[in-house]
Image (cartoon, rainbow, N blue to C red; front, side, top):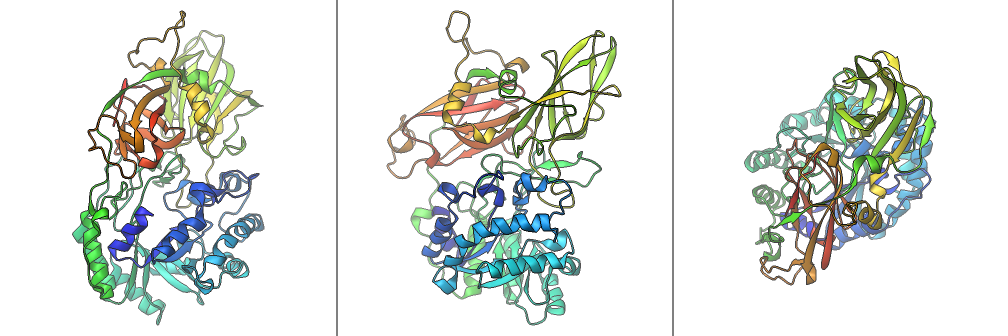
Length: 577
């Protein structure tokens, strides 16, 4: 509701939202969930109550830098399926999903007194395929499901994208971040008489782990918006407010190189250098876009309400000591095992997101050799007889890690992390885990046990048990250890807050309003996952560019707050707010 109020203050008249199928139905056997923070009706109603129209983009493919482009892995992992096509296996599953989704939307249409004024058919299909039969099916199933408002397609701003994704009898909209005047020229030639709508004006951009943080100046973005608005076009800011890819929702791109070597995982933050920042701050870009919106609509620009323009309330800075809990190997070795001759993928194991622990016995020659992984998706930690020997990713897996045996059987353990499913391009839908096999030199290892780690399923009691401080032989807590590879695993810190979710120190001004936000840094930690009070905030990784995780105030509570960290490599000794 707070962020919607900021959209209104910017001068927007419409909220545009995707619907991510795998956010509502991660497992095939579950009914779609539209409760709690997944309450789509409540979200759309809030926008309508604020005076905004709503555009819904139900996909089923949404891209959005969201894991697997919004499609569940149980579907994309179906052997032989034709994704995003008129393959009846695919359309049957989508039809079942729409049977659950569309009843949520139909009562909220403008014809029924609600805020929904338009619904999108698929998403940027001209970037993926040319199956017009599938697009027409998508359109028909929306109409048959009760959607009576305006339908439209969305594709890049050139002839190439229109060729694949547009339908002759359906409004075609554009997605682009620059050269809007050129795209308008294409529309005037290809779609005469149709209003030009840039449904995704990329006024900022997202980040991958290990890259430089992307920014776009307010003046340059506003100038591009002015071009399109000045020629009678409409624009939707992508993103106006990006927010956060909480949990393991962030997807990945691929740089197009052969195999899986070019995976580009997206960071947890989805701030996207947006006008409304991740924590709700109104940026220079907000004020620049606000001026353009008001000028284009002819509205008088009143002052931004003071409650929106002031800086977000945050907790006072502090350093939190960390205690070690269950070691990584103890955690991943727990739970029931699934046996197979060759290693199984995440999809074969029924796991969408998280990690899989693989273990097998193999004879290592009495000389230096290599452990190689064929078809690794995405990152693997390797142990031999409990001793850590190295980390492999999709670019190094087939080169392998060197090991030395004694000519006897040894236990090989491999922990594979899914770093995010590809959400755009021809490699969309790829599997995760070990897809080819594991070699000792050039000899395959057979007979594996696999244990799945569905990290998003860990609730607060489970995390409390896993993060409980280790005990020495006398039952006393161990002193804080120096960070070592051997101390990877669960760690915990505690944050004590007074009433209203505020810092007991009084350093935050003793406010009595909404709970204060925080930003969490993990100095000395390398790579892993963080929970606050049982809620999975997301991933962290020292490779950057993201160095803090945003904690919205509503996730904090009065009294004791527990921060749980699962470190995969080497922990630090403190956390910082």
